[in-house]
Image (cartoon, rainbow, N blue to C red):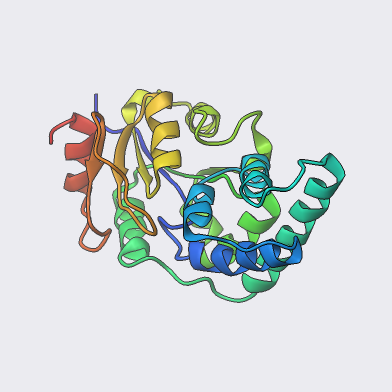
Length: 221
């Protein structure tokens, strides 16, 4: 079976937006009366909104009061939106990789834990026409590391997840893609992603070809 589609993570994979999130979550930690450690920051990478807030409050030693967590989430959404006003930086080679797939006519999906409202800002940079479908963290019951976002993307495309290659940058995202049954290409960004069965690691998207993705889909090392 040939590769049916490529499913792309967004933050840290296509866009260098984790650095914008880093500014916002560190500022939020101060707003909450705490301090963001690097260990806590790394634990947040790739997490969906509700999970990130739970991790943050626990890491700062704060009571997980629903009202306070909702307010913190709203604060974070507004701050990230401010930081994403204007073009968001690309990850090296990402724009070229997307162009290669488009030229080859391979279906593409954007699969992110980021909310729809923030994803729409990022699509101003990525180009909405680049993707056949997009799935956001607030559009599924469970975000990554659960498989739900990838399963939904495959369903919207009308393809089997096992016939898709997912491109990710984090342990959380790669776990979700593997759980959905996808072949997974990992290009680490902010944190290391340990190798495990089913993952294909690559240092950068620079120079990525359709043949490279076909090799990942075929399961070759």
